[in-house]
Every structure is written in structure tokens, then in C-alpha cells.
Length: 127
Image 1 (cartoon, rainbow, N blue to C red):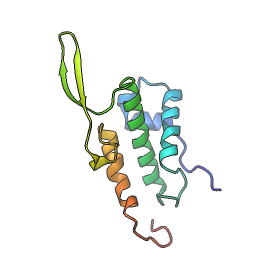
Image 2 (tube, helix red, strand yellow):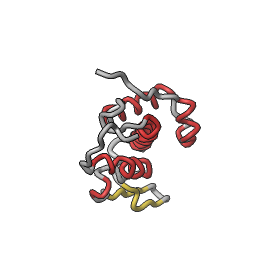
Image 3 (tube, rainbow, N blue to C red):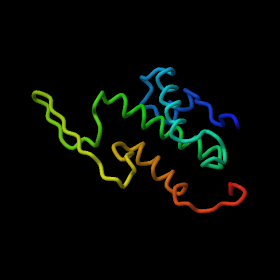
């Protein structure tokens, strides 16, 4: 069994996604670990290029961080908000993004991952 290729680098992640700077390294490492359960962190299993794999795992990490930090039970895209008496409404997205359409990180991940879901044959990894 091959070893993990991408290791989570907190400083690098925060440089790419400064909106998560208020989160601890432990929190973001956890979200990265969740991401590696969704997308294999081994070259050639799905993605053949280390830099592509890192970008995709970091997008999934951002997706997880954003999703979990919204609050328990909040799923979907914000469709309405009021200020007096505080009210929000979230709409379930369509299946165009395979369940990842409720935030921008998931949408970007889905677009990045789509070529690997088309069932095309690549001999010798192709990177």
C-alpha cells in the first residue's frame, strides 16, 4: 500500500484560503483528514499529478471547513435572510454538483474532479 502523498500544511492552506485564518491547525487538519476519506491521497489511484491532488484536497478541506463552521443542521445554499428577529433560509441545491453545490469550494472541487469521473482510460498515468 502506498503512503499518503499530500501532507496538510497549515500556513500554505491559510495563504491560499485566508478566510479560514481564525480556525486552528487542529480543526483544519481534521477537515483535511475528512477530505482524504473522500478523495484518495495516493498518486495514481484517482489523480496522477501531486499538485492537482493537493489543490483538490485543499478545496475539499475548505469545503468541509465552511460546511462544518456554518452550524449544525445547516445544509444548502443561502436563499433568504432577514435581520430583525434573525431569520435565514437555505435551499437544497440540484444534483449538478453531486452534493457539493452548497458552497463555492464544493463547486470548484466538483469541477476539478469531474474529468476523473468520466471513465476515460489513461495509460501510464498521463501527467
